[in-house]
Length: 368
Image (tube, rainbow, N blue to C red; front, side, top):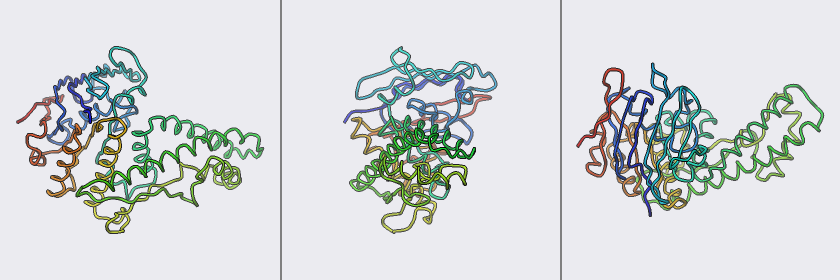
């Protein structure tokens, strides 16, 4: 199996970093330092080497270093199974991001053909106990890693549903106005649902085949009211039948935007939402590792992993097991934590960076 890793990364005027240059190899990267030093800013930059808004879902303007707000630039040398590529990502004075691959301007979506990035951030620790929207977003990130076109289907569905919701709120009863919109929603909604179902099956198989100390999660999709229509035709019929009910609610009440990802700690048969904090975190890590293993089969290399404050809520045994899993997978995993002692089990198997504050900017220095 090949390797996928950044061998060089430069950040210029990005968040708290005025100028950072890193030369790297394919090993995992440990980033430690005090809270607020700029660790997450560093891995956020790496997240932008994949399509989308990055791990914080921030605008280009919000990523600019303050108070200058002059714009920012990222440069990376990406080593992939397809060869080595130079990637440049820039934003000038709050403008949208511009991407160049090997000195040629390309849309952001082109990054998916070269690089896949998975991440786990502290906000996800509440995944099992927060609202369904967060779980859908988490699931869709995993779907996107396998099916980049899932984003276009989701955007089309959301746009069309907004137009239908407008008709519902205006109490429009003429069926003619709904016909084209519902046909489009049925087509893209069925595609979204099929992508999600396929992804859950791939995760199930990847967890089942793995030898790991992390618990497996049984996952299923649930519809908030009744079952999600499985086919395009069934979804179209459901949308038609639901018009008057939807009109009373002022919004669409059936479709993939109403599904939820339900998880159960498989070995105990306990819903994930009722597990301990440590068990919930372990289940999340298990899903990220399963996603990475399955994705490796598709792209010929493990994806980049961004694991922010990953050691939190893990005991020493699970931390050591996680590091063994990452090294066994062969992924360039970027891991952050406040203290270097949290990563002592990695030793020379990882590269170590200390991020610190120096006046109004962040510094990153390699450590033994």
